Image 1 (spheres, rainbow, N blue to C red):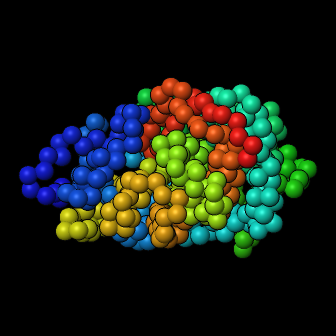
Image 2 (cartoon, rainbow, N blue to C red):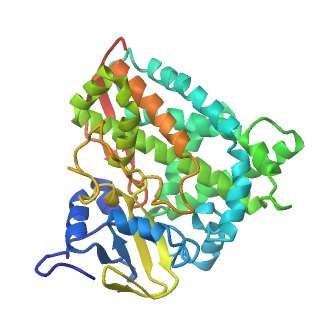
Length: 406
């Protein structure tokens, strides 16, 4: 552990129980100043290096040879070898050359035409979602608004029938909870259900192609190679979780930010030209993926601290996005913030998020409808947070509001 003398860091706890109460920004503030490379113990006797500075997150992200995604996966808990073999079928847990091969194949399904059509549909989806609640004066924001546009978009991409959409939300929640030891059983059951659905859809698309991303993925080929069934299953899960859970929670945190800062909503209503910077600020302020893990492939030194080969190194995006050296007044929500070099889609390098432009479009469309049509939003009861140190999530947020005419 590298820390400033006289600073008590004995109460640092960045694991799931803490996140279920609140995002630990006070702890991140302390670590960035006193121990930016901090050894964090785990209850099972293991531990990891917590990396909290913006520059270090970028450095590690751009050095996959030293900091591997595949060696121990991107999640903090250690996995057995059988689970690791399965996780390495996901693009998140690959190193080159597998990563480049896989990404090139998957990119065949993310054509500009496909993305443009999804973005075009996003505004209409967001308007319909708010139409359903605007006259009520109250709603449960997570399920009534935040979850709707992301899951509809992802399910449409994959060609999933409408009646399956609510179940997809339930399954992604179960899988995220399954990253914590207490929820592993439910997470595995949810994953098996998704695998079975993916296999059914893949077989159906091979027999009867449609104009959707699942058809593109089962037929995509680069240098004679295609995705095998295991890779297809893991991409299906990655797309559903990444495309739903992350964007939904970015919308949740954007709503909380505007409830806490009503003046910023007023600014957006008065000046629509602020929306591009507002979306970037929503991404920074409400970072939905708290961290990704890497594993050191060799002995290395960071800020004078020696990291050994095999050590877990955890990059905290939620902390990097509030680094005082990069962001002026970092805990302030400012819809006109410039510059805004956030790392919400990763710190650069080969693992930059494929769906970044689509996520931005969904956040803007949903929040623009909310800001223009829901006046004076207030929490009707305390929020409930997801018990996860991976996803910075909100599971329940009842709100009240008045109806505006736009």
